[in-house]
Amino acid sequence: MNKEKLTLFAAIFFLCLQGASAAEKLYFRVYLFHAQSPGGESRQQLDAILSPSSHPELAVLREKVGGSNAEFTAGLIDSLMEIFDLERVEDLFLQEKEWDGRSKVPLKGRVANAVEGFSITINPKPLGSGRVAFLLDIARTTQEMKTALNPWQDLKTVLKRELETALDEPVILGAPFENGAYFAAVLITKVKSPQGQPSPTQENKVELVTAPNAIKRIQPSYPEELRRRGIGGEVGMQVTVNESGAVIRVDVLKRVHPYLDFTVVQAFRKWTFEPVIRKGKPVKAAFRCGWYFDPGDYQPGSPAGEALELDRARDPVEMPGGKEDLSLVLPALLEKSGDYCDKLSRAAFDFVCDQRIQEVCYSLLKDLNWVTIITAPKPKQMGTGSYYDLSERTKPSEQMEFSDASQSRFDDLVQDLGQVRPKAERLQIMDPKQTRRNDFVCDYMFVRTPAGAKERRLILKENGRSVADRKRSLEDERYSGLTSLLAPLRILAKDRQGKFDFVVTGKDKIRGTRVYQVEARPRSGDEDGVWAARIWVDGETGQVLKCEIEGVPVEGYEDVLVDSVALNIRPSFIATHEYRNDKKGILFPYRSTVRVEYPGVDPQGPIPKIASKLSYDKYRFFTVGTEYQIEK
Image (cartoon, rainbow, N blue to C red; front, side, top):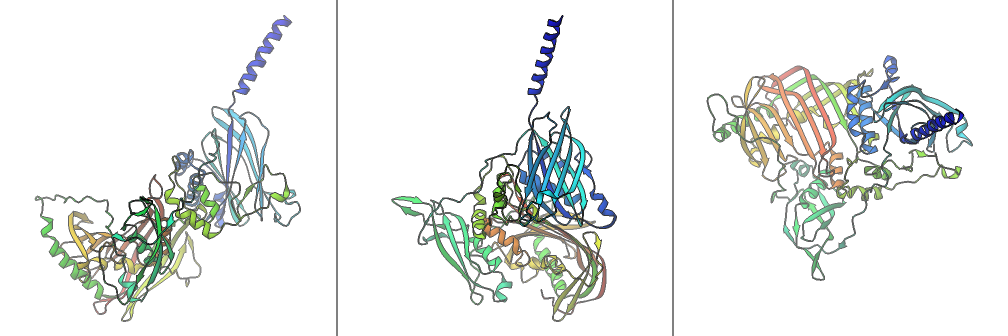
């Protein structure tokens, strides 16, 4: 009997061992963020637990679980900003801990920079069926790290919560703290963060040679506005060509003006040179050259390049009564729309309206070590001001070593991003920390005088909160209502029509009005920032009800121009203006949207840069007439 019991106990013990050994390793990833929080009652909403199950807007995070940490972090930041209406979210660190899937021993870690440190403790408990319960405790040092003898002896809890979640189900915890709030995102997964992914590297050096003869030339665009203001000079470049003489890269060495730097790069990327021959074989090479913009002596020459194709159908729309030969309609449309633009340009009108500005803007990575995140998980050493994983550190002297990233080294890496082709990850070139979300409600006033037009924009609300000081103005050229109002003049004014080729592509109906769709393409390829346009024109009155323009404006978007030069790309920039509010035959802006993306950098698709919407409502007019010429 005793022998049978021993045999039974041994079998049970063996089965227990088998079950224990069958437990899978799991990985806890803890992302910590800090944000400035609103005051009052809304502050209490930050003390929350969020998951894709309870908040459907977080479902998009499930799709990012298998991707890079950088992409997942960016998705978390976007979700936090959207849900809590936050203006800025700071990404502090990522801490990853391995767990055997059964032990209840606490998982501990520390991260620190020169100013502050955080202690992370996770008490896990397996629940079965792919679920895990745990207690998360995050505490912050109360002493400055680089001056205190032992900053870890005095900690203050910033977030402590007990909860449970499923594998690969991200959960976000919020906790108000002092004048802000901390957010921790926890993800439990069977897969460790990918290691050893290649980071952007320098392109193989090429021989610097004397400039070869050009076979194909494209003249850079020189906007009339810049010539009139006397802006010019020589843009210095280094041009790299492949074995066949085609330009594969243009680097600006001497800058003149953001738009002129940009347009030179766009034009030279379409040039072709005689191949450079070395030892009887064509080779890749680079040479230096310049292009001079002379405000006093500049004649438009050959086209500046093909206009980008708008993704639109060109077939005419069949209306009741059969098809109409739209080509016969074009002369009358241009005549009527030209008369309308003439009336618009001569109109004198003063008005006040409500203007709402909603914008999300992303910024390129500005720190060298952030660039390495593009194809790799966040490294332990992140550069000055970032957090280091101290879990495996042993020497106190090693904890506070920080390295600076020079701007020149960053520029070198950014210039080569276009050569990177990751196999499985989304390329991350935007800094999640630098995402800006603006939401303004303004009292907008437009005053027309003989000397020109003036705008005044007083902020009534900023990011949902009323502004007490009603004298605070918002100055930013990209929010100009004048740009929206006068957009049709850039293409359909009588003195501008000769610079474009027009085609009527169909009919449409806007708010009950039958309109013609007209596509316009500049004969030079780039006409003062216009690459292509699509316009909806009322065939009876010539009024423009909608205008879509593709092309980077000459002023107001210098950040897009600088990014495009650095990345050697042509951005996708589309501004759409809609018009309602008829006052004596002139239509005023109702809504304008701008969307900017960077194509060609990531093989998985364009990378967003700007998404903005400007809405106009409650117009109050002072005078309307046709007295003076509006000057931009």
